[in-house]
Length: 377
Image (cartoon, rainbow, N blue to C red; front, side, top):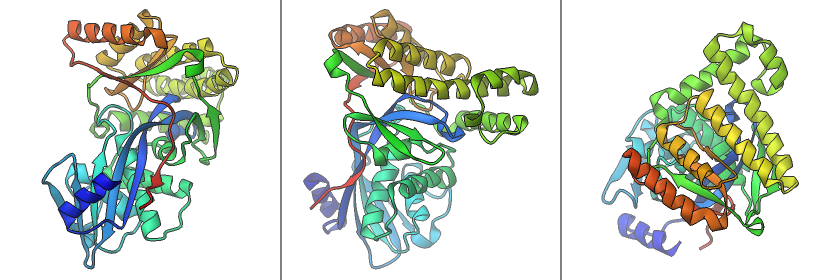
């Protein structure tokens, strides 16, 4: 807190009134189903975005980022409207707009969740600001309300039709657990996720093939799922079994069917993964991760060559399971692997990337961490 407070004072000439932080996330399993009322199983990572904020006596919003030295974005509260402003400031402006901030503010951002890596840097930013605003302006919103506000900022202000998972886990996560989240009502259950005693690590592989969810691919797939729901006359893909969905294939065009097939099978994989964790059956968990990647690659078609090389190489090095995570089209993969194999796996993936002419990947691991919080003075 001391560092961001000092930098806030250097930039804005006063101490911040409040400092808050929120983490990025890894989704263990349950990809592209949060917007279909599904269950997901993410956990918060240790990398966080921290924000410092103070009110101004006028109606000017000034936003600075420690990752963009010397660049201060300014806009009046009265000018806030969807898709207004520089792209880097848009996520912050969206939260202020949704939470009806009606006074000028000064905001400093310090982001340490890798951008474009599929680890939800956007949700970490949104939720750190939402947490700070909620406390500073005494909005008295609960965590579910804050999650929906942050989601709306991304949906309506930025224009990315994301689901609710990323914001929910960034706010609700608890250390040592994955969060089984029901995306229909945002009820959640903490599922112990402690793999170190089993001699395992979850290796996170940032392919550095940076994804962009605003280019339409994400929206097209969400639209396909919504079309499947409309064509089948059901409430959501949550409300149909895999067998029943398959039996109604003739009612859907081929693309709509295969997109929806990913969703209904992925929902089942999440619940199966919970049972595997409860039983400490990591062989089964690994199999489910593999199935998830194949579905995302072949049915949902949101993988990319870098992700596929990372997954295939990890499996060749003894990983129990591996898959792409996040929105896709780039970003990160995860591999559930014996701790003793991690360095060998990293070296093999780095070599495979070099041989393919890809940018060098980055590797890190993270234990499940706590969600957003206000940092005490």
